[in-house]
Image (cartoon, rainbow, N blue to C red; front, side, top):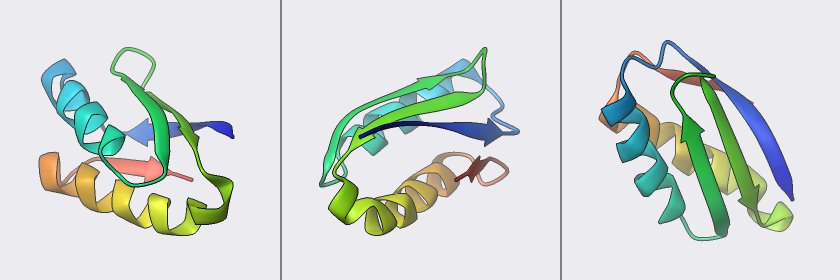
Length: 72
């Protein structure tokens, strides 16, 4: 299922690209796009694993930019 989330305090386009690549590697994620200009994450992922996927996304985002938050 496709969903969109706000990325709060995403600092740079390079970080957005790194986050996108990290999120795409999470098991159950079909596609992911992090847009720096709109500060949005568009995610297509397995609904049955969404809670686990969201936790992994938070870890990946914090590893790249500790000041950035994802609003689920």
